[in-house]
Amino acid sequence: MNAHLDALEPSLVWRHFRTLCNTPRPSGHEAALVATLESWADAQGFAHDRDTFGNLRLLKPASPGCEQAPGVVLQGHLDMVAQANSDHAHDFTRDPISTYVADGWLHADGTTLGADNGLGVAAILAVLEDPGLRHGPLEALFTLEEETSMGGALNLAENWLEGSLLLNLDSEDRGQVYIGCAGGADVEVDAQLPSAAAGDHERVIEIVLTGLKGGHSGADIHKPLGNANRLLVRVLRSLEAFDARLISYQGGTLRNAIPREAFAQVALPADEVDAAMVSIAGLETILLRELGSGDSGLKISAQRLTEIPDAEPLTLDASVMLLAALHAAPCGVERMSADVPGVVETSNNLGVLSLENGRLHLCALVRSLHDSAVVAMGDRFQALFGLIGARVKVENSYPGWAPNPNGELLATFKARHAALLGREPEVKVIHAGLECGILGSKYPQLDMISFGPLIRGAHSPDERVELASVEEFWPLLRALIEDLADQR
Image 1 (cartoon, rainbow, N blue to C red):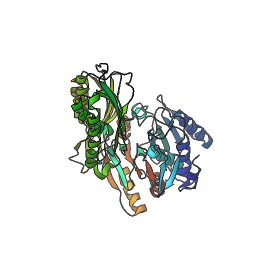
Image 2: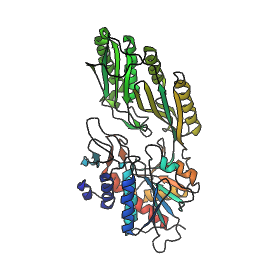
Image 3: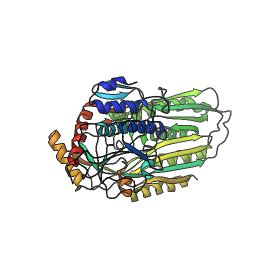
Image 4: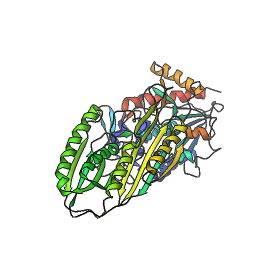
């Protein structure tokens, strides 16, 4: 499948990316890809090993005469975000990713593409295979479960890596290099809320909110995008005027993807149904006006259900209190950085929200350039949802990556970028959670940078990669590795 990728340049990179597309690899299901890469390494004659978590390392000795060059760790994560449009049936644990080219970009058919971080991984494999590349000692580090928990990096073995320089290939902007990133933590909210059976006087309507773009909850959080959970909660709040009681809710599927769709069922008095339907239609118009061109595809539909669901609606008080807490919860950009212009300092994404049989579950992802701000945001969630009796856990925290603008690796990269492309790269700090912060905490001696080709729409079915940027990225990576081979 995806044979058309073999016709793209650079062919070595795209051939490996084809393997990644054809091998299912959602977070937590990377075993098949790990086995494929180990078999490939054996065929190439590369040594390889794993740590106790399952992270994979491939090793290639230095080219003759480059044995004294600093060791370079090429790093990327094997897993991908599993997102598909609601009208597109796709089993990410079994089905390959189907790709196509349009207008100079590579897309997937109705799903995430996996260019994040598949193109970085493909480039690393291409570096190892390239027979004409002159290089120092190389280690390829492939981590697991980056997209769901940073589990691979957090559990990375200590005293395992040997190199002193690390190239993280998980960035998504052409002409830029990253030297710092936000840290973060998951916030998990759970509660069992009181319910009461629907009365004979009540009817049920189902509300569906779709059409939003979605996106990366770090890199895209500052953009004028709608969050389906935030917006549908607002719709549900408006129905309190009709004594609506929430029965069920499902919005978002990943804590690190801005939710694109959300669904809810409510019970309300039969004589209020018509007025509620009119109110919902009116609110769609209002929200479309507020979102403007930033997210103009919003659609809200409502329909009467002929049968009452088995699940009981929440009591009116519980429904009102829950929706009030969700409406008040932090969502989106909390603060811009005062020290790094144009960079988000602290944010939160209301990523996954569900209510079933009175059982509430919310998973949010807090990010910040300051670890203390992550702690403070988690405490706000505990204070807010504690008011409705919910249990709140802040877990899977990971540190940020403190910028080092004077590093030798960055200086080498800037010089090579200028020589090859005629301009120096923009030096950036990213609000997304790269693994570099965690790796640096375990290996403080590492000098690190992150760069990659141009990817847009990551963590959504709109994910795509610009072909021309890959053609630029590959020779830049090769030339940088050769420059580093000349250092002592």
